[in-house]
Image (cartoon, rainbow, N blue to C red; front, side):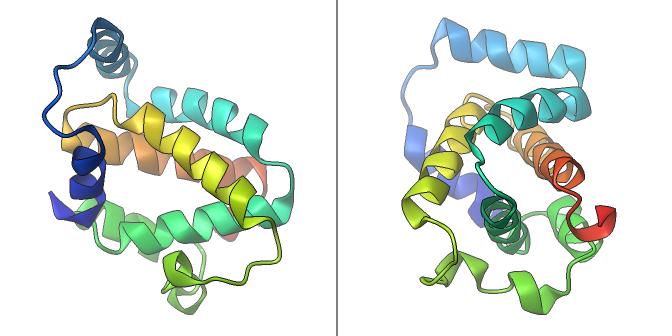
Length: 143
C-alpha cells in the first residue's frame, strides 16, 4: 500500500463508508481515473490562487509519490522536474506562498481521494489530478 495509501487510510480508519463515498468510487470506476482526475483537478484548481501555490502543491505531491507504488514513482520520475526540486518538499517550512492556503488545498484534495477505497485506483486518480494541475499551470513536462 505504501505511505501514500496508509496515510489516507489512517485518516478514515475503519469507519463505515457512506453511500456518497460508495457512489463516488463507483462513478470514478465508471468514468476511469483520467476523467476523474481531470474533474477533481478542476475543483482543486479553484482553490489554487497562484502559480507558486500550484508549484508547491505539485512538488509536495511528487515528493509523496516517491513513497508510493511503482506507478506513482514512475510518474514522479517522468514529471519533468528534477528530483532535487521535489525530494523533501513535504518537509520544507519556508515556501514563498501562504502555507495555510497550501494546507487548505491539500486537505480539500485528500477529502476527495479518501472516498476511494481501492488504493490502486486512488493512486491513479491522484496522479491524474496532479498531472492535470501541471497541465493547467504549464508546470514540469508541460512547461
